[in-house]
Picture (spheres, rainbow, N blue to C red):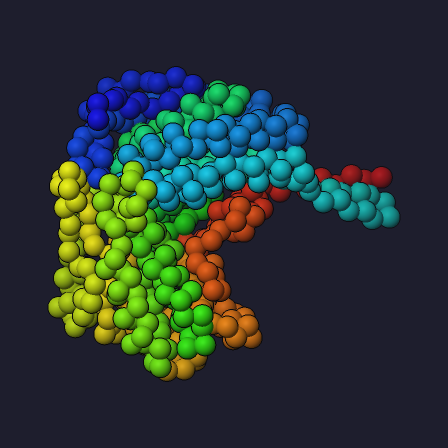
Length: 478
């Protein structure tokens, strides 16, 4: 692939930086495909000034006018779905079939959903004998998003769409691992008619992230990332009292009861662990299986995992793509080695692979660990790779207690035919999102986010829209 230069997009134009560039590597080959120029604090300040000016005009527009432009964005994203999905593959190394069918289209769905809210979202009215009152949801001003590398298009759209719908301007700092899709989105938003300055892109690592946190004119930051990063964002944003939304890591449980639909449970466990090569924060990497079903279940998922196709992400038959980087791949392999040293049994996978003509890429076999116990690192720590830990349980009460025994609380799954049990267990699980006889399905109207160290605030739904606004109350004496 030819090496391209990636620059920050400020007020609709690419802006060159004087800072040293860094390489963007295609994870499937290990080759450098782009040179990225990081933004300086002065460039960020310029972006904020343009954003503030554009935001005042945007907020003054009628809601249905903003809605029309956001709907245009949704349609433009759909029109360019295949091209944008191919760019996401270059960014992440994930399977194209996943990107084109679900990950990238979810961005268009977000804009469509929030376009409807932009036109219909209103405050409340009140009346007393001698007065009336009303509330308004007013935009915060200039907001920023710090994106994760596993779903760069989805994360960018999930953050930008509600911010723009509420009348804000939005500055995106994509992960330095995945800079390509951010600029592609900016170009498409421009084609759709979004006024310049409302969506801008600043590239870089934690240094520009710190500058975003410190900037006094940025009112809110929405982060998708790890727990440690979330703590830093909170601390660095405290000096300017920014509003913060944090969607952080997870170590989600999947509870497989013996009355489940067995084939569905097997497929769900595989999907909930190996989608996007396991690089999903909400993945159900702790699979608790009721004792009577455990051996049959473990044999089934092991056999299926060994059959999964690893290789070129652009090929339709490929099921497992590349890891994001060599460093991350080595981290996942180290976790697998530690699990084995602590007594877990590797029944499938566990090794790096070198697909033909992609020998320099970062590929790991889908890995299943059996004989796991709750105190093992593979059960306690977020690995963020294609690694499933299988545990067993005897009773419903035991399953709930052990599922909740984690500092995380992002997602959880329940596989059962007993609808009463499903509701009963869901009520007890400590997680922001719970799926029953399914997993990781997040329609645009449903909130997504965590509890405990998985963060706070929500992506998607009306709750996300509210997080980009403040409430203004007006009292009128009659």
